Length: 243
Image 1 (cartoon, helix red, strand yellow):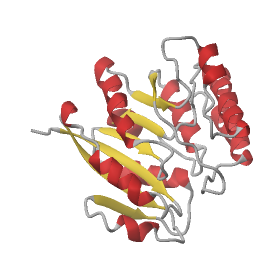
Image 2: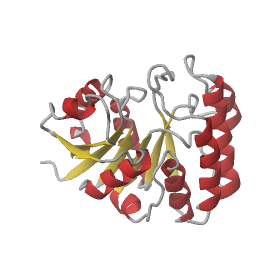
Image 3: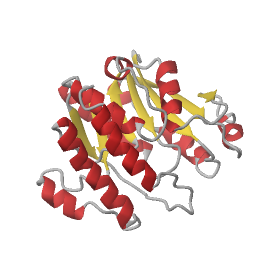
């Protein structure tokens, strides 16, 4: 008998190319080994394409709509507010991340009682040191600016919070309900990732990282984050360094 639930929060903006395949994969993930049910919440951030229409084809999925467009962070916050699960995972709407990685992330959380687990794209050698993972972390189809930008934010995290994370901008983050619901989140853009990390760490909560698969896409394929977001991320880490 299922007694607990995982809430999957998916912010989406103009993702008609990927959202259907992603939802099929997310719905197919088997969490029975953890005795967990699943609720999937898509927050459509005023898409101009068929994103919402495609989501409506999945009656098991909860669809929330934002109008006008308010940003990824605002969409995630709306999803957190709506979620009823004992555990909450934030998942991007594209197919850069594989929902099957929910399984090792939940296993890591439930095995040691940690409050947050991040899926790291760059932790290719989890039994080896940080330097090895730093030097070998880049994925073949990932651009150097994207990789180096992400890695520099790992050092920003270290400087601002005292904690080094191999992948601060991962779009696969898992939390216990009481941890993520306790945060008074304020930001509305991509920087919400860094606000969450800074505030979780400021609470003294450990963030455990586990390796995940990654299938990077290009700007031409719809990737939205850009250089400006890097500067906003630095500012956000500093702003919320004490919670």
